View (tube, rainbow over the protein chains, first blue to last red):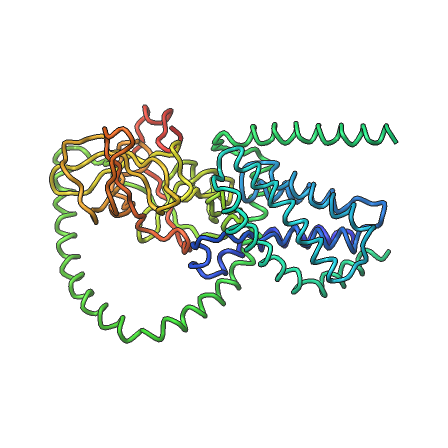
Length: 171
Length: 291
């Protein structure tokens, strides 16, 4: 039963991400800067830090699976989030053994994961012709606001997610 | 060690190939989803319905409090408008009755204006901002089909992209490109101007209305653009937006009107899916939205 908690949490985050933009005031959403909620990615980063053992790659599997679900539910273009989340969590998981697990390293790894994932997403979407902005515009209007907004989520959810994931992963 | 390095490279290359295949499979404007995709969409949509209700309750509460502040001013204006509308209603009723009688005498009861409305609620908006898409809580079971127009009280907001059994996704006007054309017209008493809406310009936040027919003369700013019903899928008379500016195209042969959408794409809550009642057989193969 305990094994089901992490997938359920990730599924819940997918569902809530769809409503995230509706909660923000319309002016912010319509404005120039594009804030992308990467809550699922943040939760995956936490689970790779606190839930996974050194030898288990469960969080990478979850990243692929739930990235795929995200693709189906929200973009209709399959594989983009699956691939980018998978790579980002793979990087996170490989880095984890060199770092201690506290909130500062979590923020650092989280930022790195967002840069990797969102960067890959942007490259793929500009290759298939959906995105058409220059690199500097991308950094100014999408990457930086996205990182800041998601770091807020990371800091706010750190205590509770850490507590849960440690508890679920402890047996 | 060498073996592991090779294995890693092999996995990487395989996943790249898989990625390209998956993107290639899904990008070419499919209107019908595979059964697993429909199932996942419906499951996520069902969960969103559950979460959305309390969230909506709180957000409407907040906006209600804001509205209370200027209730008095609004009330005054609305009362004036109401008396105007009363007159208008009588006129419309008379005209409707007359129109019906005339149609009866002509034995022509179907019109390209007729449509069956399907009420729906937006349950989610895609967090990925390059994809302008919202999810609504009605699907194939309620009669929603791909390529149907979606409107709000203000005007058109998009068309159904894909439909699952209980949910469907709406492609918003702001995500339209040259592949999603709407045949439209400028509503006037005489000399209507016909053309196609071909895509959305993100820089100016306007729709690009390419004018085919030049006979109508000059277009003025502020004129209303409505769907013409000529494409076969969208019924006639759905309001799309108002003309903001007119610019010649790069060769100077045709004019493009920049049309500001009538409905706000970012505050969509309740929508109506427009199911056109009269669809010609010839149109079925060659649908407007997927030209």
